[in-house]
Amino acid sequence: MTSRTDGTALLTINDTTLRDGEQTAGVAFTDDEKLAIAAALDAAGVPEMEVGIPAMGGHEVELIREITAATRRAATMVWARMVDSDLASALRCGADIVHLSISVSDVQIERKLGRDRDWVLATLRRFVDRAADAGATVSVGFEDASRADGDFLVRAAQLAQQHGAVRVRYADTLGLLEPFSTHERIGRLRREIDIGIEMHAHNDLGLATANTLAAVLAGATHASTTVNGLGERAGNAALEEVVMAARHLYAVDCGVDTTKLPRISQLVAQASGRPVAAGKSIVGAAVFTHESGIHVDGLLKDRGNYEAFQPEELGRQHALVLGKHSGSHGVRDAYARLGMQLSAQQAHALLDCIRSHVAATKRAPTDAELLRFYFDEESAWTA
Image (cartoon, rainbow, N blue to C red; front, side):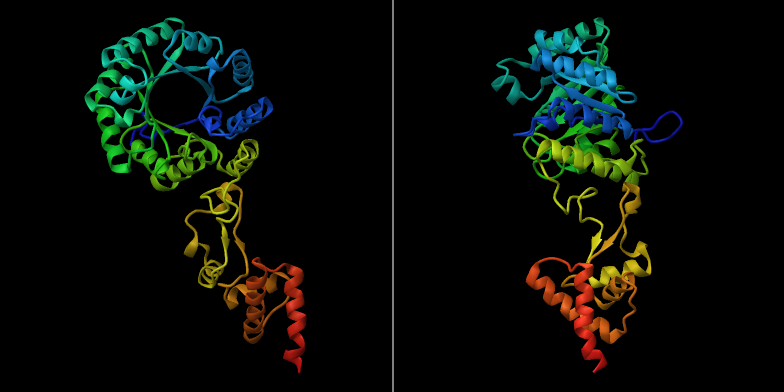
């Protein structure tokens, strides 16, 4: 685990919802939505935000300048290719960091760029020098790093460091890695350079968060994330997952106010038109909802029986619902909240009513329906 000089763990979140997140197919944020998302991330203590692509045109540059001016705490980053027009646009934005990206896998160098490795290194050297000479803080992005030759990647990273870059970004562009190989590759890079390393993981195999955490264990200093895991194809590592996993697995506090994560998730879901699944980890509507009789009984006795972390960390709380898998303890607790104390016989009878109701309606009963079940059964108990 990378540490500061005082021995505390270091992990900086660089949230790219406004750049890679907006690259999700069919997603286009309005100006107001981008400003609102940036403000929410900033208020939550997210330390860095990648806020856009200046090469998209003059309007995008002005919007980025507006976001940057309104941001109070977070550092802002803009994304650019290593081409003259991109760099010129990026330098107009007033962002704290200019991120310059270039392909490093032979597949992309030859079939996408139509170039060779020497051209990549020469281009990297030239553009990092130009950006640094212009006064920019420079991050270098290695697109398709997970398919690059390891020796060439090290050489490119060392060159970036020699010419003044403060960080390199290791992009698993196609989401091909798994945690063990991620740890090995980032560990090797960590041994060869002394600047920051950012892990940018894609989720094509569902491993983006796991790969990000493996990279952190191997020495990565920065984690690239998006709210709700938005991003190209299957998306990126989710902000909420990386922050909470770092806290609870590695005792690393990223400085993010986690009570604000559900609201940010809802904001981005609405702006993107991509609803969050009820069972989505951390921010899904149902992740602190319990029905199973065994679980409900355990929670009522001691929350630690079935609680990986406290929902209050996210400004949330447990919810107990009644359904097919409920037990009598859950039924008695639900009626107790309505001011009614049930006997064991009454609880079992009402559980049958509840199970029949759920099978017919596909939903939990309301309080009014619970009361109706009670009064419908009451005559049988008093007969």
